[in-house]
Image (cartoon, rainbow, N blue to C red; front, side):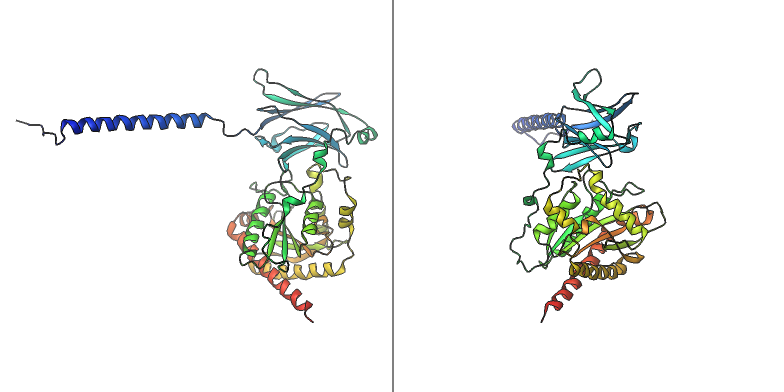
Length: 420
């Protein structure tokens, strides 16, 4: 006959064990309830744009931007080329520019973070346009909050008469110098200051690779890697013209280096052209005459950065204008060329470079007087092999190492030249 085993636990112990299980169950229930409440909370309070619609009519084009909440916005026009700019707070974009409809009046779009906490939506126009209406519509039916902008045809003369209407004063200010102070004040002033300039940013994405790689992202990653290598032994001070995905004007990049008293200015880029077989890095210095047609075309593309972001090129102080046109510093040019040759030699040891890897053209971002300046193209995003390498952190470390060696050699030569 089968007999059940006698329990080794007494009645008191069984009661205590049951109480423990009940208390544990309560704790688990409380935690699950709390987690459910947390999960139900909205992940972000940032406005989200999830639809753009265009209605094209005989006498007007209606532009509709749909989002999850009401925001303050500002609309203004810019000329040469014709553009409409919508200034917004920081926005999360759930749209793709490639999917947006074009019309008789609208020929292109760009959007992204402009600077600080502002976003911009830039509309490229095929003709002079007047903003006849701009207003907000509250949610209705299955429609969310909407910004409505009606565009009507106008003459070039009337377009330029009204070009500055609607621009708030706060948006005319450039990035203040206080945001770009060198943090490490303990380093001596004799320590060379290198300004690294990751090209593009924010609303200006730069080149786009075949796999969707954005130039603005990979050059910022390279800038951080290069900075890490340069500051490792406190041999250099390093300042970045931008530290995140934000737009900075070309002339402001120059002004940052000028105000900080930079000893060297390095602008970082990745190119894209129609010839998909072309690959390899290159180094550019400033010249009033381009070395070849490709260099001239590249300079034109890079110099369009302010136009892409919807910047009024007529707003320019005398001080900055002087910086942009002052090309009289022959010593600066010579030092730029010397550094470019050192760069080309070192980069050629680490990565594939173009056969003629030192070129020159009229890059606006290289026009800082008294600061030796170069522009580095680390390859072509239009080439599948180059794009794969540029996306690789290991490859970017190789590029950064080559640049650091060239910088070391440059300042060694400069130091020897100053000796009596």
